[in-house]
Length: 348
Image (cartoon, rainbow, N blue to C red; front, side, top):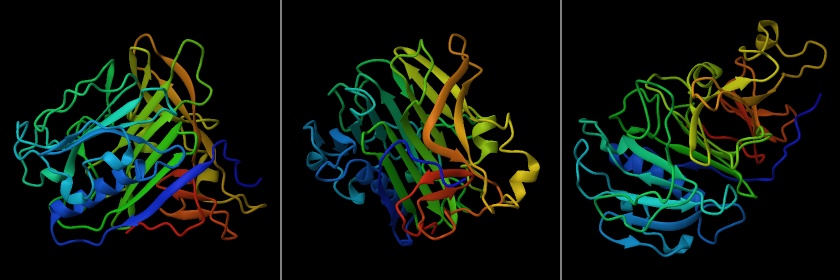
């Protein structure tokens, strides 16, 4: 059995690496800027996100188009400076018509309830299928034009909004070298952003249309985030199968979901297959990642799968590429296997 065939064609803005600057605030700004510029690059390639409005803490743009953004450099990302404060801050609204006509996310540089000094390690991310009004100011983000979803990682210890941008660092107030991988399908229906640092995949942000959704969900969008406080990868079955890190949106219904392991019940795969490759072919098994809602009344059930994303084995290292011959068509971050562009993935 060879590598799985991708349903989508993928565009990769990956291996965006910034050296450790020696200043914590600059490191986090570099990481977030790499995410935003990777989502909405100049020239608007097929499938990328589109700038709708933005604020650099002093000026605001409400002109559509990626070359009209106010977030033109990492230094344009400014955080409020006290817990739940009303100080000036940066924010940006990006639209993805591949998901639906007006679907947009809002990224806000906001420290939330934190009282620590490294405010730049926190962000807020929201999404709305109807987009956002143009009523934002330098101290308040725009309001949603419809039902809004708050991106969260399913954890009680670390949640979004006001969640960590990159997780699992040995010292949150210490300087680090971020690496950002932005991957989106050219039809705009699927976007994944992986943050790496210190030799590990640290965080995943996912903005997708569902594959094979059941009747009754229309339209269907699935969002996901994974951050954690311990020095481990968060792209693992233990994280996504035991915490509701996925949030679904259908019309006005918002529901929390788990990432299931299709074909292996609640396990990544049977133990004997999890630690060794197939002893005849030398191949590692992969299985699709399903979407299961068990907690939200009115939406409980199985809700399809994620496009072109698979569970791999826990016995392969972060950054392992497939196939073994060296063409590197797929890469494993944590336990998740993504379509890849043939380059050598950087983790630090």
